[in-house]
Image (cartoon, rainbow, N blue to C red):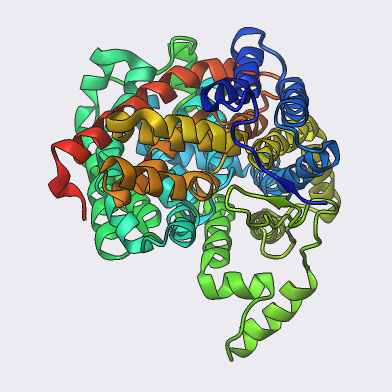
Length: 558
């Protein structure tokens, strides 16, 4: 039996229906920000609220609602949960074998200043990982690195989530922008150009904003030269690559240019005073963090796990290799054909029973629903391979390797439940039509739509945890609405992606990932309270920028 989505199910009124559709989202905000529930409790109860709204307000058959939740839960475990498990596992291997002490000292040898460490690790290195892997890897790994350097876990997680704002739109080799070409029909290159004329302004601002959050105005001014080197080099490279190369490489190139530019700059420039957190004992910190002397070989060996990680996730992101890993490669290369054979045998795409093609959207078209289980193609598998190679680099026994893996899974059991439940909530919200109802309501803002357009992307990423998913969810709605209100559709679709990046730091998935990475499982409410004000501030900036580009600075639109 098919079921057709109804976007105005309550009193046949769009606005009343939108208020009802907001109930699960408002409940989640209340559960985390006010009630301070543990993440997995907030996630599971939000899923229950979403199911009740979908069934009783939206008329979605209970069986279909439950199966859509199962589809989301499976996606929350693979690929997202798998990335978190393997990322934390790799980090724990370096800690257990003492290699992280050397990594820590190598960063301290560049700078002992906490402000500059945040720029190097959270902003530049995190952006590189976002460009190569996406999903939860950048926040998980960079936050774990900061904690290892001595950052407060909550601070480390929060800073990395905020820093991750700059690269998200071009994450995972440009997938968010490449994906939205399909439903909108707008060439990915055109969207890439427009996003590349919005986000660089944010990319210049984010390093400055990070340090303001950390240290206040006066301490920020002390390292302004370093902030400018970090932000301007990133933003300039992001603009040039997005406008002249395409959406695939802006993150990787911008991150590398920013990382090397800042590291080289710090060889010739030092801040007047070393900044440490108030909680750090100055005398103890001086003794404890004074860089020891290690050989170049020792430093290279210590960093090797993350170099191998970079190589594997970059390899996994190359389009031809990605197709082969998924079992879809049709070329003649012998090696890729062999990989394709393995990838095909390790890719399972079973239909979701009682759901696949049984929900009709507003246009009367069936919505496919499958469990996408790509075991070899998952980014987490690339990280696991890096962890396996690391076993030989750090010379840890297979017994300890497996013990560490078991410890990692045990530590992450509640965060994985959180991730699975919030992704399930997102799928129920989408399948029932609640997301579309909210989007259609925002689209009714008329002349103010250019300002609210990024908020639609922000909402989409908050719900789905992914800029790619938000673009697929609202991209075509943005295009249609923009055309009806006289706004350039390229700007609207780009604004969906640009606004979406500011929702990443409050997405339940991202919050759960960050807390899992720094050992704060159960403290998701604290992290949410830390990031939510910054998220709203930054999406408002994108809204103002989009409004100006639509009405005053239209020459910026390609």
